[in-house]
Image (cartoon, rainbow, N blue to C red; front, side, top):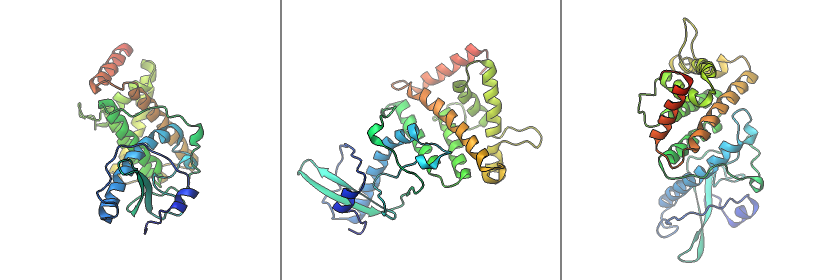
Length: 276
């Protein structure tokens, strides 16, 4: 097997088991192209479950909390693979291949023996939004530089604000108003968070510009905007806290429609005495 997947690799590696109702790609081994495409689909599906663990345990400011991608192992060198059990024929198959797959080198892993996920994926309107938001969160975690992380976080803020773009919420003013209502406990704190999101975004006074505008519109690097590594870590710790608060709120709406989320936001705005 050119990918390097073998019984010895399975025996010496951490094995994570996923129960999935899947259709194996025809005759196993008949087409490497079909096998790799099958592997890509399965890895993507299984990663969505590990995304919950990343949300629960991993931190932007502490890369040591990261763990590897599904199907990779120590020394896989860009390859991916797994063992698949065919219930119909009562037999197992090794499937491996090479395709564009990230290898995490900084993390020390996660003790799954002591881990219980905080959320279970649901296939409904809110569940689908949460699922895709966690994919963006994963990409932010795994980005190799701070500027790339920030761009993913900006996209994540936009999705959490309005994934269906019901109110042209790609405009930062709308994004911050929809997110700050999750973060605030009263009218005063709402406007405190709103000022902070001006800094995150592109609402400036005179020569003062938000980070989003400086990075996207002026091509600056976040590494050059911030004065130190400690400042960057503090920034991303704060951003992750905001992402966590909003996502946990959305998870509580499982089984509801997005209209229910918008209704809840409007009710909080009214309760705070803020015009939407």
